[in-house]
Image 1: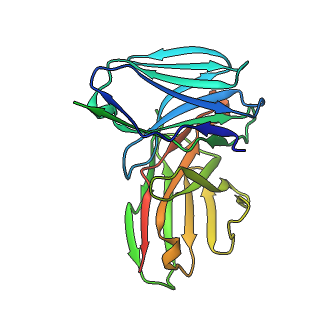
Image 2 (image 1 turned 90 degrees about the vertical axis):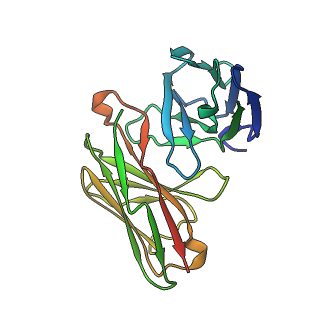
Length: 112
Length: 118
């Protein structure tokens, strides 16, 4: 079993829709959770970063972490064609040497 | 956010030659950098963790003699693919972790290097 599971999609939505991207994880030691966006043939770009459980909002993006159910979500409001990309979730330990464990990514297409 | 650069962005080499890829943190010092490999439409596969001033830590199944990593300074890590073969063709991405002392936990990624071995 992978430590971080993510539905690969692909997910296709019309412009303006609310998008919900989800991950589950199995390692209860994870304390930090990240969402990255990766455009084709580019390196991943950090979108959101949260610590422990709770919500974090940044513009059209909201990240949620529920540690009790080991569930991570990213919501995109008013989705735009420029949001079309692969979204990667990741979890990390609470240590200085901790590396992040990534999900396989969900490919999103927002159609104009 | 922090900026990480990679060079070259794209390289084509002949089978049997060696290729060096550089990863630089431009506006912060990174004691830890990571090297990933990514095949088309697949996720990131961690190859090794590069620690400044010490030997890299390789993931299981990654040949340390084939993928040489040097982290000579706090802003530069290099990955050398030795005696490259066509199956080494891939997208190689590095990342640098924001220093723990600055309160950072997240990784910042470089733009990637596409290696094609002919």
